[in-house]
Image (tube, rainbow over all chains, first blue to last red; front, top):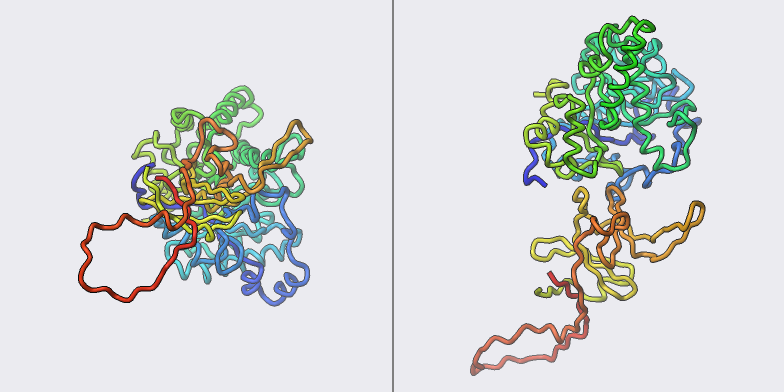
Length: 352
Length: 144
């Protein structure tokens, strides 16, 4: 393990906004609705997780509340424990109920809560903007509300969407984000609307589900490129958060080969699919792949060819947390390590 | 290896543990049914404070659909990623040959056996009033 860690940027931190916290920022109509009818996420997720709240067992704040809900404890256990210069909050409150007006109110309230209770008191933090992503018109309105606040660094969409993200129903969100200079951050999770994580139905184990996370990202990678989103929005930037890395090079090889054979089907693509990917996409590292031989990690990075696009992330406080000084294999060398830990994120998000 | 006094026996009841610092190393001392075991408090995976993790059982299977549970309280799960280690040996459950955490020898000794050697001093002329003191507790020792 290296003796020192340079000033770093953590691109995936999960603060938890409790229902009570969000309710403080809801207008009366929706506060009453929220209190009486609640939200879809109760009682739970598709699978029982590895641990309660899918969190490190040492991450429960001593003062009470769920992991990630206490700013002082988050400072102590994460921001002060390593030299974290900037941390990006991806709060995972579900903005995916059937009632779209309620979703829009939830997103507005959650963003207000993030400003007042997280971004104002802690200058090291930035946040992803929550939007009611299944209704592009409402999502665009929320982007417009905060486009001037540079503490919101990207627009957040969970990977388990109702449709592949290349579909045109989502395009107004991309137009607004590109116009505002905000990347689209796609983070693992969300409520799928009923699609299993696997292309062959619902598996039994959380082990299968967790291993299969990248399948959702593969669907979006292929869809965003094939539907022509990146031809339509040449300034759009996309960040895959918690989607894995190692599966991407062979996926691009396969996509490029198919495109050469099938390009007449989709003349919207002017270039090989992998070129769009390397130009428009960034990738966070956690949960980092751990090949049996460290040299194989270097091979994977070389196949990917995106040294300037890898962004370090911890996923704090979740159970599959990656430690800033314990997760990147030492074989990558100091130059690349330093870019992954901070330089690449600084360039992408324009941090000083 | 020198032995270090890290705790009284009473401080660590069966099923309990104590995190101690010995020569700059954080070490977890566990009591399993009256036997003491000591492990380095650092997970070999990503460096978490391993010995603060939950203690559980070994779940095994002789075939799909069949489960057996034993060694209650002897399997330590890392608080971060849940890697499992045997408290008695420090061996990991999933790869006992390659992945293990340092285990230290432990011992229990009565306080009367732990008196430091008397310095070679000549008795002086004055004698203060004294009271009898006896050490009745037992102590846990770790070899580091």
